Image 1 (spheres, rainbow, N blue to C red):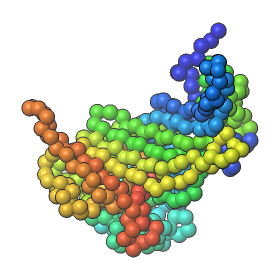
Image 2: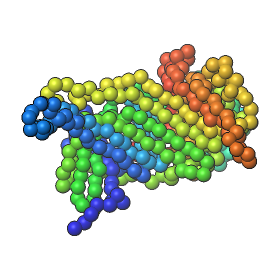
Image 3: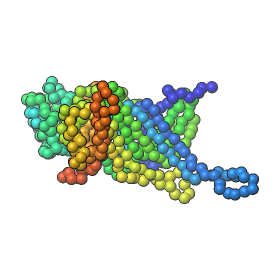
Amino acid sequence: MALASTSSIQLRLIAEVTPGTTPGAGQNYDIRITGESFDFAIQKEASKEINASRMTTSEAPVGSSSSGGYQSELSYNEHDAVLAALMQSTWTTYGTAGVAGAPSTVAATATTLTASVATAGADSWATLKKGQWFVLEHPATANDGKLFRVSTITPPTTTVITLDANTPAAVVASTAGAKVHTSRLTHGTTQTSFSIERQALDVGQYFIYKGMTPSKLSLNASSGALTTMSIDFMGLGAARNNATFLGGSTNNPSTAYGIHSAVSNSQSLIWEGGAPAAGTFVKSIALEFDNALRNQSAIGSLAPVGIGNGTIAAKATLSVYFANGNLFDKFLANTATSLIWASLDSSGNGYVFTAPNVNVNSFKITAGSKDQDLMADVTLTLLGDSGNADAALRKVLLIDRVGAAVTR
């Protein structure tokens, strides 16, 4: 008799139309994982009846819950649907699948990109937001594959992108074949749920967890390690079968993009206060985003009848080689700052996470023993950028996806 092995587990998910109901058609997707913790629990209560036998005579279910999540190593385009559901929004995709559909002839100065013919439709540069990050495809020039940021002051037009001064372009004459690569995700209020199937393929057992709504994200990058992520869910029910529950839908295999590390691409960066972190180095960074979801129970239903939204709680934690007191001064003065973290794979595909308004919640330095690096442990609370003149940018977190055309 075969005994199940964790090495034979496959995780698949499909977006639901009705929360808690697995679709009978559509597209399901394999997910690359390093571990998972999905669980269905039934809360049971024993009778408190008093009787002379001293025995408990019954126990009955009073509620149930589905919870857990999966752990993975960060890779491009693999988790984008789940990230969008976590942010309760959808990707604003530039061009076609995140890449301009038609090439432009572009000239570059240090601070501007100028198209010889106005861009239009889905390829229009004017659809980009102030502060948005993008990669420029510009063959046979020094700007090809470079990561740029749109100016936070001057909005782009159909012919000109004014660049952030900290991401200057190489000066080149008009050159054909230029394409912008980018998409943007911000947070909203529309929940999306999934049916997530754990397949134990060696023993032919299938568990489906339904109504699974992303609750919390944790991203971690550290020198000398792969970049890891975990996503937790809250759900509505579960079932088991000897065959897949997803047989009516079309399966899509996982992507094959490289795993990220803190040094997988030299353009991976950390900015603080609107500019590259200067005069110091960051050893590790962790980003957390929590929707504070809650189960909603009702009479007549063992499973929750819904999942309620809470207030977004987001923070970043940095371990920094101590070199100056700039962040400590902001901590003392309760001065707002900003944080940007870019994570790219070796081919230049990845994500830029922008927290436009953060508060230094804690700043700790201790010399625990001799012959050690003096480290500053800093916690930043991510706040809404409510003072931004552009209502679309009044956000806690913005995610820009840069790289190859997306396929899922």
